[in-house]
Length: 322
Image (cartoon, rainbow, N blue to C red):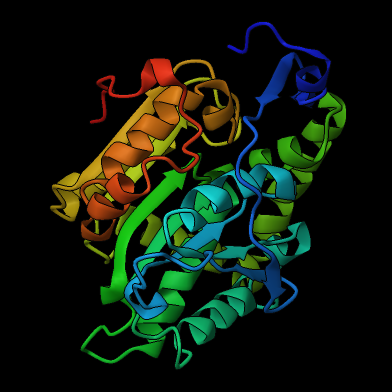
């Protein structure tokens, strides 16, 4: 909670009505200015880390895939961009528009192909990859994984580069109708109308649309990449339910046999608002997870003076992560 808020700080507070009686509160801590961006395509934007004093070549530092939630504002994404670029990582932000979700073969799968082509560029193809996805970005990641599998040989030269996978409020196939209706509309009557319409659309459009969602859902629950995973979810999220995250975690642990699947559950934060409502716990959990990854073990120590969005009171505090 922010105390003693002056006029300037008060302007940083913004209440967004995402759905009836569930206000989303943003109390965004000012972060370091995000680096300039380079547009790769209409959906991909690259932001490079400033020059690192230790002279470590960029090819030795991870590339972060930041898979955005629907209609995300850049100033909110920039908090995460600044966190990673200040620790030496370049960030490729991937956005998806509503119509691109509704037509996978012309939308999300085209984006996935663009991402994989970027990852195979001469100056990128030897770099490790950290994935940080939000909401429908989790679905987009499943499409990207499928494109990776189709593009690589038995040596797994692309997926073997993935060193960590972070899911914030991931949306599964069964939640697409209710998730999109709540994300795009505020009026409960219109939400219900859109929900019913999307249900009908998915039934009628099985071959061109729904079957692709089902394949992505299969990848979500049976991810072939054994890199460590971290799930953030909330028991009051009306868009991405706690049940879906818990089922995915159980599947990865029990069916896939992964021992490095972790989670942090919150009781009262709205969709993709965990970092804003529980900033300290979120960032402490994130850093604890990153410390299990070789590059970040040193990077977090070397750049401990960089913005981490964590208050002094929480630094060093034990955070439960299962």
